[in-house]
Amino acid sequence: MPSYTPSLLRIAQVAIILTTFTPAILGISVGDVFIVKTGTTNGGCDGKNIDGWFDDTVTLANSASAGAAAVDQDSRKYLMTFFSIRPQDDATKAGAPSPFTKLTVLMLEQKWTDIAFDDVTGLPRTDQKKVEDVFPKDTNGLVPFWSDDLRQYLKAEPGDYCSDKDNLAATQDQTGPSTVTLCIDNFASTQGETLASVPSVTKEKVSVSSLQVHSLTLFHEMFHLVLGTAGTPDHSYNLNSIVRFGTAKATENPESYTFYALAYYLGQTTQFTFANSKSAKKPSPITPKRSPSEIDLGLLARFQMDTRDVPRGVWVA
Ligand SMILES: [Zn+2]
Image 1 (tube, protein in one colour):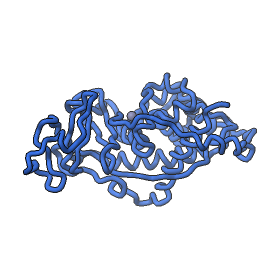
Image 2 (cartoon, rainbow, N blue to C red; image 1 turned 180 degrees about the vertical axis):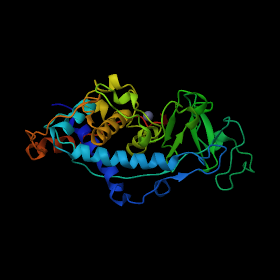
Image 3 (cartoon, helix red, strand yellow; image 1 turned 90 degrees about the vertical axis):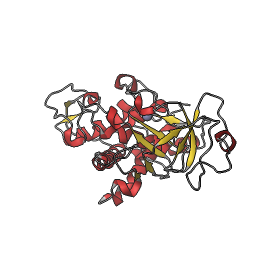
Image 4 (cartoon, rainbow, N blue to C red; image 1 turned 45 degrees about the horizontal axis):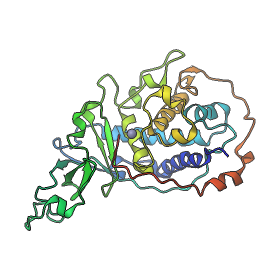
């Protein structure tokens, strides 16, 4: 039997998670979901357009939810392009967990033999215990980082993550609460900030990959955050690869959701459809040949028991 069905449930799950924060959405702001680090130093977000980016994630989530539930031919084509979900598959059944958490922390790299910090006072321990005494040592080359914001240790690759200019963001769910770190200085200066600054599309064959804005980075991280880093390995950021993924791979890949949501949004707000990932003339409305009521729900239910054993992620970008 095809193995796409559990993944179908997951895309729906995302759509519904996002929907669950959608109805309350009038007036919801980033502060309702994240604790945003203040200040302008040590990773503080003051002066950055966090509010605008967050508003876009809500807009995109609304649009993507509507898209996943819609049965018209154009809407279903987006699901086929970005997730290999066929018109007769059901993309709308699911449950709805909803953890939302924390944005940006500063972490101090230590050595395993350094004096550990105290998780109550945040100061170096007075009993001189070392990091390796209070936090299980890693055997894969990861080093301990102390987060004063969270008063806890976590393990990561040595070095300043954002000093690698290729890194745009990371989500961490080893921490409690989970965290999203945005490497804002690495965001492309040639891109706009929000959906409002997506370049206007005036012709056909403009790829959705050329219409990127900064808020999409936060949107991408939301999928790591909500679905968990272990279940969301970044298979690819490249659109040409993404459209060739099967459903199972696409529904793990945050950038697939990101491209889908942006494409669907642009399809609703411009004169073009982006159903096959590039701008094209909109089709004339046609009644869908099949509706969700024709879907074999028994088949879906059988696959609901499926679980996966994936190593717990540390950092994902
Ligand atoms: Zn990622």
